Amino acid sequence: MKKILIYFGGFLMLFFIIPAICTITPSKEPTQETLSTEVSDEDTEPETSNQYDYEKYKTIKLLHPETAQIEELNIDEYLYGVVASEMPASFELEALKAQAVVARTYTIYQTIHNSVKHENADMCDDFNCCQAWISKDERLAKWEQTEAESNWNKIVQAVDSTKGKIVTYEGQPINAFFHANSGGITESSLNIWGGIDYPYLKSVETTGEEGYTQYSSQVILTHQELIDKIRTKYEDCEIDFAQENCIQILEYTTSGRIKTIKFGNKEIAGTEARTLLGLKSTNFTFAIDGKNITFVVTGYGHGVGMSQTGADALAKLGSNYETIVKHFYTNVEITEVNSL
Ligand SMILES: [Zn+2]
Image (cartoon, rainbow, N blue to C red; front, side, top):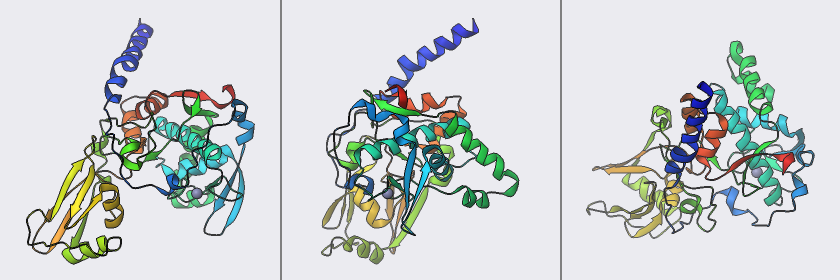
């Protein structure tokens, strides 16, 4: 009976709850910003299926940009360093497992589609470019000594227990973007990077992320500081703060992030405003007073794909890593690399 109930619960999740969350339609109009990971993304056709032999990805050539050295690592060892760097070890094991699967998928996707990005290397350890990575020694030194060993073991367990598992859409590894905190709703890739409409990178809602208040932030700028920042890109920008509506939000994305905003005589994309002003996401409000302008920002990151705090929130509610991955990436499967 218990089993039947579990199956029935799973059935409910699969057929009703997940699709209900996943069917928010993204806006069709693209914005201008591209991430460094997207700029050089070669839109090449995937190769034939025999490429997926995990043996082929057994060794990752990892570039350390600071020293320009290239280190050869077993993919699982590489992933220990990625998960250890990308997600707090205090997060739920199922969230860490989801992170391991997503990082493995991202690595393989980049190796297939973006091999020209780094000369002689598959990935680098810069999170602005590929994904973050930290060596075991460095990681252990940063943790409290009493919990360092158990933290590391938890990360190893997350990677090893999902060995060879990746996220696929129609049989192909996905471009598995992820970010720190979505503020409760993720963003479709089209709204952030335009052009490329990844069918699995749609906007989805997640409950429980509001508890991660450390990911909310604010930026306070004087009127002149704001003008100076906009002028680093738009030299002829003028803002008359005596005017009402001198700063105006013109359009929101379907997830409620800012799509277009006007600063004085300049109309710019929300993603560009985020970069120019150093905001942590495009989900922000602002208030102007006699001297300053205050931006209140929700969430952290571009908002596309898996939210890491969202993954932890779902795990706390009892979701396993597969359910978490399938929540954030629409209509995907978890596949063994060797079975493709
Ligand atoms: Zn890189």
